[in-house]
Length: 173
Image 1 (cartoon, rainbow, N blue to C red):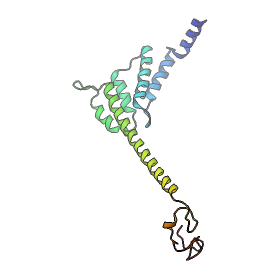
Image 2: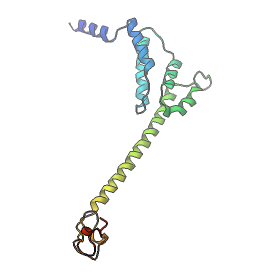
Image 3: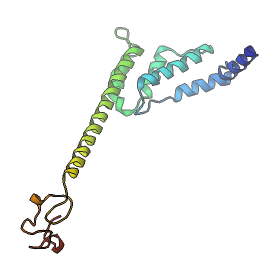
Image 4: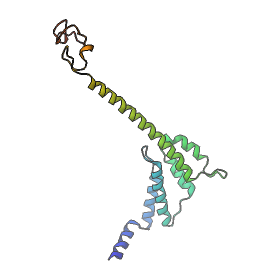
């Protein structure tokens, strides 16, 4: 029973029919790197599809794989694409998949490091503002939250009633 079950699963999920080959090639050609996607993982997926296509007897050249990668990167990788395009087919300094990985991973790390720094600075600013708000207490002079007695605009009065206190529009808080 186990052998039969394995054969059925293999026939279903690792089929080597012409429609499966067409489906795999279509999937390979449609794969695009998303802006927030790790390029190394994306390239691994492309290579896995290429391997499955080659198991079925079709061939995708190294240059075809490199062209597929370069043609399906987001605009944020434009400079890297321009640098690498000239190396495809170059006899003296040919472009390799490892070179592509290194350049794309470096760009990805830079993009996401900047995003993390921006997010951290926003969080730090919010945290400082929150702490500043927490430090402000209820004024013992006018009774309003947000400042203390020493900062009160109505320092001469008590409880906000004398000298145009908060109740009379004299306090700025």
